[in-house]
Every structure is written in structure tokens, then in C-alpha cells.
Image (cartoon, rainbow, N blue to C red; front, side):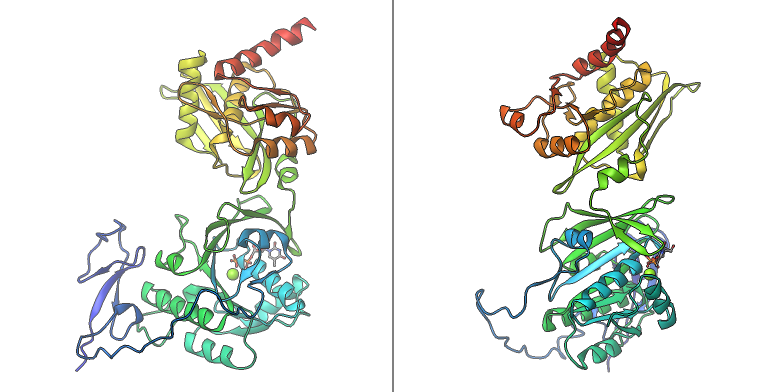
Length: 465
Ligand code: TYD
Ligand code: MG
């Protein structure tokens, strides 16, 4: 007789425990263990050796061979295609994660409508909203006239039976993976076992039929896709949809992609008619620049293959506190401490009695070390009260010795800056080939102290005038 075993599964990391405990040994989270039955569950492995069936031989095949359709389905929404690396890949599974209300359903409804208009069969399965709600959204987005097929359903077996009916769909959207449940696992929807088993069934469907599937995933408060990390390992690509409260733009960031680059971003703007492509993000991030105030420096950054210019704002103010405040939005805390330490010990600039606030304009988040030089310039400018030239861009990495180190894609950064009307650049000393790339004159300090001297010297220069 089959024995029904129960296990306690951590809802954060998916680790299985024999008995309940307050804290998961594997990931250290509290109160995440939930009792789940494992009899017949997909994730539970062979039940016993006695019932193990004899294996069936699968046909081996060669690497070369016929591939029927174009491997990618291009949506025509430029920023989405950029983030996926050139369109949805047939037979693959894509996971789209993001905070509630960020616009995941909106984006996918728009993508579904765009693809349906191009003659693809698109099925949108929603487990969260009723058909009427989805129709209302589609009307608002001007997508109601497209031939997207809609269902409100959460059972995986029912969904698979529905999809098997009629022509094979090109794209299936499942909104969201946390609402799906399969008969094969007997725990509640939303638990790790269910999410994993449902995702596995849908991915198997994609691989065997060649349809592309998109899974929508919720994000927990600490920014991970809720439920098991294993889903991220199972799918072919993971995209995160992010945005800052109070800002209208959204960024679709590639975290994992088996078929393309992982450092791409797509930028969108949320309007009353849905999401709109932002083909030139620099204009968005530089939009509200005031120009002549001290403490602002424009950083010429890169996101994947695309240059993005953003303003970095610093405020350095005398501190009444014994331990002055360091407050950062959009950049790395340890990195700021490093730049401050280099300025103190190698350039003679003192911040010890000052509060430092650093903000990347527009709620944008910078991950590149190339921003060091722009941050240092903004800090020195704020401390001295001397505004930096409004038509200058900055990029370069600072080493612990204060030396300015070269960064990749210098030519592309300069070209973008020139296009947006910047007339000078402060950048690492580089090879001669750059000179031909643009006509912008550049100042190329070898040491951070040279830049500090130049900013301090700008007062003398303007006094002389
Ligand atoms: P939604 O796609 O439902 O978010 P998610 O699926 O990620 O939870 O987006 C909901 C938000 O988007 C909501 O706050 C309203 C806003 N929105 C617009 O601003 N304009 C629009 O045209 C639509 C459809 C939504
Ligand atoms: Mg939604």
C-alpha cells in the first residue's frame, strides 16, 4: 500500500525537511516551512524501487536537421524585443517577474495584441483576473480588436487540454505561475511544490510543441520571484520589470537568457494608454536638469549595448552628528565609501564632518563602476559650491590608489553625449583611436587629484575673467 508521506517544504528556498521547525536550516528564513504531501508529487522522485518502471528508449538525433519555423517571434514592441534578445524564442519558457501593479499584465496584453495582429495565435490565460477585467484593460490599451484568445483558468491539466484543441498556439501567456495548480501535486496553490510542478508541466508543453510560453511571477518584498528559486533555473530566460514609485517609466531588465545577452534593458513609459517604448532613455533621465547648480554631474553610462546618460546629484552638508550620515539612492553604498576614502586620503578633500547625500536622478539605478568619476566630481562640486560645466559628461573607474582606470565602450559613450549636445568630456586617459570617434574635446586626468585641482581651479579661472 502506498504510504502518504508528508514533508515540510521551505516556501523561500524549496528545501525539504522531515519535521517542522521555526527556521529553515537551508536559507535561514523564519516561518517559511509549510506541510506538503509528497505522494505522487512531481518533485518527489521515485516512490520506491519496487514500483519503478523499466525505462523507455528515446530516439537520439543529430545537431543538424530541419527547424520548421523562424526560431523567434518578434513582437514589434522595440524595447520588449530588445530585452528578450530579439523576440520570443519558440519552444522556450520566459519568466517575467515584478512588483504588484508595476505593469506586467499591461505589457503582456500589449505584446499579445501586437503578435495577434501579425497573424500569430496567442492564448492569454489569467488566473488572477476575471475575463471582464482583462477585456476592460484591453479596451483601454486599444487591443480589444485583436484576435487574442482569452481564458480565466488555473488548473494545469485543463489548460493543457484547452491548448491541445485546434492549431498549436505560437505564444501562451500564463498570468501568474503562483495561481496555477496541477492534479499531480496535492498541496495548495501557491506552495513550492505546486508552483514547481505546474511550471514543469508548462515548460514540458513548450518544449514538446514548440510554442513559446511566458510565465508571470510575483515578487516578494525582498525582490525575489516568490516561491522557489528553482523556477528561475527551470526557465530559459528571466526578465524583471522594475520601476520607482512616483516615476512613470519602467525598466525591463534581463537577468538570465539562454538565447541572448543578459545585460540588456528595455525602457517604457506608463501612460493612460498603457506602456510606451522609450527608444532614447537619456532624454528621459536628463529631462528635468537644471544645469548650473553645484553638485550635479552627468554620467555617460552603458546599459548592455546602449549608452544611457544620467545625472548624478550630490549634497554635502556640515553635519551636527558624531557619525555623519551617508545616504544613497540609485548607487552602491560600499562604492560611495570607497570614493570618499580615496578623496580623503589621496586628494586631501575632507568629508569627515559632513553629511553626504547621493541621488541618481529619475530613480534610475546604476550598476557600473564607471560612474566613480562622475560621483567624485559631483561630491567635490557640492563640497566646494562650484558648479561643474553644464555641457560636460564624466565616466571612468577610480582605483584605490586614486588612479583613473579606463572603462569599456568609451567611443559609444562619447558619441551619445555629442548627440545630446554635450561639448566636453572628463574620462580616463585612453588610446589614440578614440580621437577619431568624436570631435568632443576631453580632459583625461591620470589621477583623481588632477580632477579635484581642475574643479577647484575653475573658481580662479572664472574670477580672472
Ligand atoms: P498591471 O499590468 O495590472 O500590473 P501587474 O500585472 O504587474 O500587477 O498594471 C496596473 C497598473 O498600471 C495600475 O496601477 C494602473 C496602471 N495602468 C496605467 O497607468 N495605464 C494603463 O493603460 C493601464 C492598463 C494600467
Ligand atoms: Mg497582473
